[in-house]
Length: 403
Image (tube, helix red, strand yellow):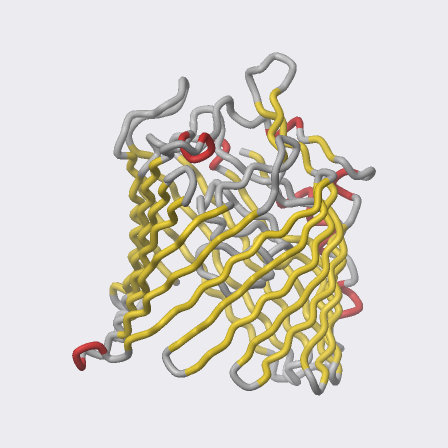
């Protein structure tokens, strides 16, 4: 098992002594919520590639959330470890720090240091502006989970919005399934042989600046980023039996906007990128309409439609599935005492006819247990990237106990 905790521990300690409160702080609050999850994932088809396992895989997940707040609320500490032990894929057994940070506020200013997770974006199918964290591809195919990112963030609240400056001293490489795992490329990726375009490699450092503001019915965010691309180019090694990840230099500027009017949400995300010697645009635009209290049941049903575009071309850029796609989805919120929710959606490529469908369901069982069901369906059609997963359609059951 490859543990990510030791090599990022140094970054967690950066500037922490400057953020801690004085010893005399009173009425401090400490809350610790450990979690234990049992997971089983079953695949509908036999594996497509040699060495991949057949049938189901199971896992035990240990995590938790610790939060400490000073008496005057000027200091907040957060800690969230993560451990997964998988029965079939050694690359899916690992430890990580999702969160290990301290935030200090003084007037209109705040500073965060440590490991954290940041989310930018408004769209449902894909968030092209979400660039701070590395995605955890062994946890979730659709980039729903993230690795913790060593971060130093300085923020200031303004009368007309909020501005944040980020320094990211250490780069997190993608985690991908191993040779025996499912949902992998062929040949498998050799994660130990990663190469970098920027001098300094994983310690080259990234910087970002973001401005956000809510004005009436509009929520707006604009950002600029310079550093290392989170998505690598996958190049064949000299023997042709492994893919080597190559992380390129990335400059990116973009905006995300959401307009709310009654039951309507109008959403847009767009970025201009300079990557691999090319400049191109990537965007997601769509809408969501919610039917409230359907048939007096208390349930709300949201209908979602989005269009995904990516203008990259050439073999020297990271592969991209969502370049000319339509997404249609539905969100059901029961608004019951068990917090029952359902999200289902389908992405279809307009050119290759490839299809990726997903379903996510969750419901509380009592006060301390959560049931989750997730499903993924792949039909690669004429898309070579999606065809790699044609036999990897699956369903996942997860039972989480909160202590």
